[in-house]
Image (cartoon, rainbow, N blue to C red; front, side, top):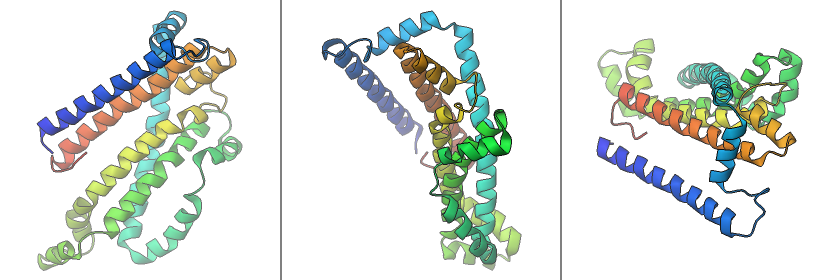
Length: 255
């Protein structure tokens, strides 16, 4: 994908985001809804910024990103390692796949009670929920990448006397990288998706905590600000991850 195409897609995405915000603004101002229930985003954000100091907002964003990074790195690393090992070694895969398929449909939020029992009310329980959200999409896509390699590529590697680990690292892994990269980006987005629920576990900081605390105070403006902050943080970091993938794996990758 050329740089011009990427910039064009980014511009279209920005225009789409602004259009949604403009429609929201117009609907809130002239749609007849109560501003206490459905305020215009401009009014809500400005009011929330007046009530919540900037350093407090930065602190909420920072602690949430720390939790997401810890959970995502752990889940993605384990997901890739297990998927590559299970996809490459058939016996290990036959043992592993039923266990993963048993646990995969269970929503990460359903594990919150067990997370509290196992890890208590500290940071570990929050990171564990995010870990689960990241692990399964990364594992599934990495598994697809390793098991879906064109046999012609493997045979070509074997004709060059590549076998065992050499064939895996020099042929199979590079061929599976597009699927692995896709899984990483999906897992990163889902990590943000469970952030609010993860920060329900006795949290006193974070973007999810800010939203739930504002709900108890009926502060709709701060709720909207928190929602937009989560979306903006995910948008910026996902773009950064895509840029790193393109640089490390080559511009041929369409992310």
